[in-house]
Image 1: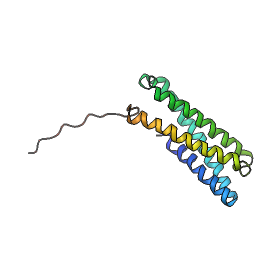
Image 2: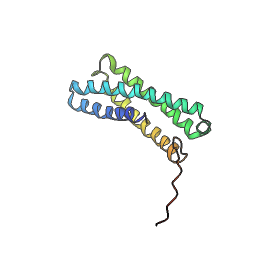
Image 3: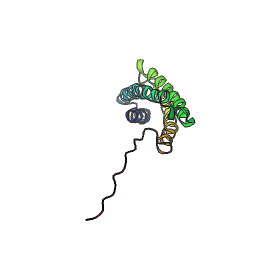
Image 4: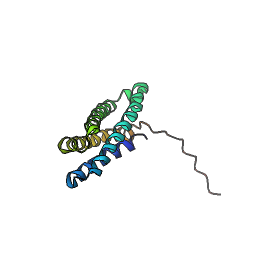
Length: 140
């Protein structure tokens, strides 16, 4: 449940970059800097928890999908970290063209990583806690 906020921040970063490209308003550059930071730092926290799951749980470790998901997540974190580091010194000068390019590339990486994460949950039941269904009662 940790990944939702970093993903939302990095997807929102695409919107702020496009808004800055259209308006050249410094507000969008500053908002993009914050979204890049939140997305990157939150992604590192979430990725650390995911790495622990991958290493500790044998059921996850034996799945090729889990390893592919992990590799894509590392690539995404690398893109997000680079994007944030480019913006730290001068947020407005880094947006065009490289910031926008990295944001769009990160969006594609999010889509691919999310697809594999969905396969882990829905196809392999990773992270799913099954409870016993209560016995149906007879009508009285």
